[in-house]
Image (cartoon, rainbow, N blue to C red; front, side):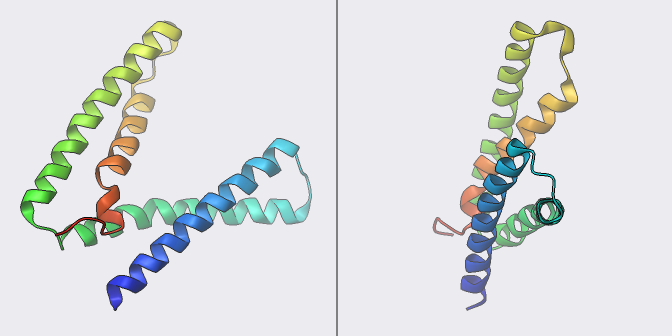
Length: 129
């Protein structure tokens, strides 16, 4: 029962995050300058920081429920994607703007995308354990 509550909460949180992101982009695009939009954007920032803590925590908690073989496969997928995305990002930065190559930005973007892709199934307990 606990697993299903956690799964429902995670799905609701991701849906809320998606809807709030779209609304925040719309508010910023329209340059809306009133008290309600400011409070909404502050709430969105709090949600973003909560998601930054919640997603890795739930991934770690759910990882404990899987067999070591599946975890090892996900870790290998993470490392391979991280290396691939870092190289691609560096090459594109080198081609497009060689004077402004930012390694911190390259590695942080690659790490976030790799983590999201490699551990997506673990977040929602999709595959057999």
